[in-house]
Amino acid sequence: MHTTSASSARAFLSRRTLGRLLVGVVILYSAVHLGYSLWRYGPWDRDANTFVYGADVRRPWMEARIWKETGFLDFNDTIYPPLYYALLLPLTNLEFRVVEPILYYSQFLFYLLAIWLMVKIAYLHQKPPPMAYGLATVLTVNFHPFLETLALYKVEGLEFFLICAALYAFMRKRDVLTGFLVVTAASFKYLPGILMLYFLVKREWRVVWGMLAACVVQVLVLLPIFGTDTLWRYVPYTWDVLFGSITPGAKAAVSLEFQTLTGTINRWFAGLEGMRENLTFQRWAPVPNAEMAYRIIGMLKMALVGGYLYLIRRRWRVEERHAQWPAYLCEISLTLIMIFVVIPSTLLHYAILLLPAFVVIGLLLYQQPALFRLKEKVLFAVGYSLTAVVIPGGVWNWFFPPHPLWGQRHTWVYFWFSFPFYGYLLLGLCVLLCSKRLRASPADNVRQHVTGQHAIPSAA
Picture 1 (cartoon, rainbow, N blue to C red):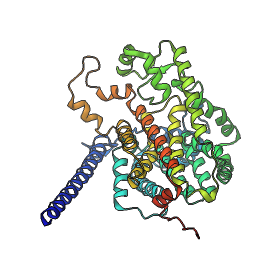
Picture 2 (picture 1 turned 90 degrees about the horizontal axis):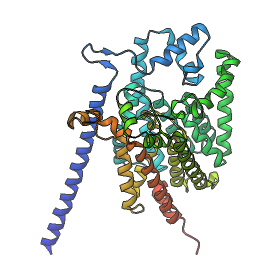
Picture 3 (picture 1 turned 90 degrees about the vertical axis):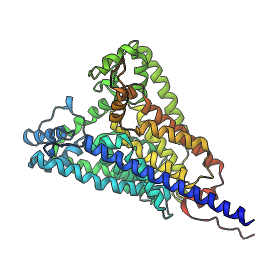
């Protein structure tokens, strides 16, 4: 008996040691991955030890400066709403060599806060264990869209932070603030506006009041800066940017950047010839039989949007929010995925807006291992791996030999075949299964796991 106990203890210690070793390897790899990305793709000349001018933010900064000097902005080549330019206006008095480091280094604080917020969102009133912060950090720093946004300090990073802040405010029942933050995020570059649709469908009227308040405040702030004509012209322009003729993705053209439903179907029809044309440093390639592609895209969008609206149709009272919080997280995660179903064309780094969904669902799977099954965990792991590109593209291109069709551009082909978009879909399937498990589980068990609140025994 003593021998059996000693053997069991050794086996336990062995598993514990193996687990710690695995965690250490993951943390070490994440640190190396982040360090490699910062070194390889950071906005500086390593030989001269200076910033490399011409990063993505330089364009809106120059447009803000022109707008300030001339009072005119060419709407045919502008992709940002007025609020972003208003934010940049005070910086136009400085040289860009001064502005660039400020914008680059300040984003690190926002990202640290975003990780903290995502963990708090997933754990509600419970005190998160240290491992939860570690898991959220690992999921974040290995996420390719995050690393690209970090390298080019794009405005989507600010939107990502505002989405996390809005969800945290909603969890704390600060509904007016939630609406204000959602509209503010959408006012930097449109796409977070899908959360406005979610709160409207859910009939969260206090959130809607916050959204309306944000719109009024923005008009009052921006009107003296830009004038009535400029602001009014942005109303139809915004619609054209999202759904109309301005976006090349709406014109039967394909690009490996478009990790969307529209972009994926268009690439199916483009075939090998379209891939060759797109991979020879040409941004767009034509779509043969574009009419058939559009029909398929339209039918799939109608089916997916209809199914999504049906799934989120139920309205909960404010008093139920904490008890139903895991279900809310599943619905909001599906809402963020719908961005890439509805919008025809995006860029690769826009998927940073999916990072809150990946992190909170990953944390739900971690904190409730008995509730969720292997199927959900495998779907999540594969979906995350496809979207995150956990092995840096530069390593892929260096490690594999040249291909006769596309040479060393292996990562370009990875995006051409829509692997990140399929990762979004697998995350969506994982969320649907998680939602099903939550509905099948007794409400008291879910509340105890997520909120730390135990069921109140009945008087009987």
